[in-house]
Image (tube, rainbow, N blue to C red):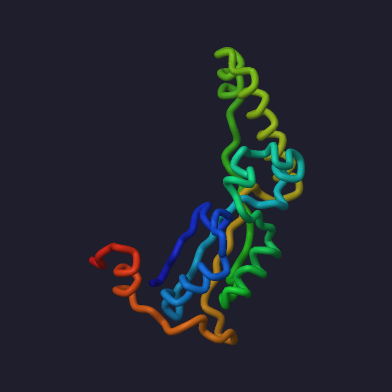
Length: 162
């Protein structure tokens, strides 16, 4: 495969190293693996901690990542980092905040205001709440196993290759 994207998945895996090793077998020599996950160095997390989002609860997220821990994970899986960074989410408009207050959802409006503060802090320290990494098979790392074909990938995942 030329591209595999895991958007908000890796943090839920009981053994992310093994999963990434397996996925690496399906990448073509120039293929890329893209991971997106919450960023534990973000302004949101640094300001709000686990109050940032209920998704950070232990029953929802098994692992939490920083840029350096993401690089280490990819290396352990036999993948080379192409790039790691973060991105910001769109801000809430003042109208959205006021809508929560006027509808009586004070708790929700306070939560949104806290999220906005985390976003502002994240922009000040130039670290967004979402971490991304792009990796490829490392030339200097022994292959995690024999290369698999696209057809083998689709058979293993119950889909037909078109």
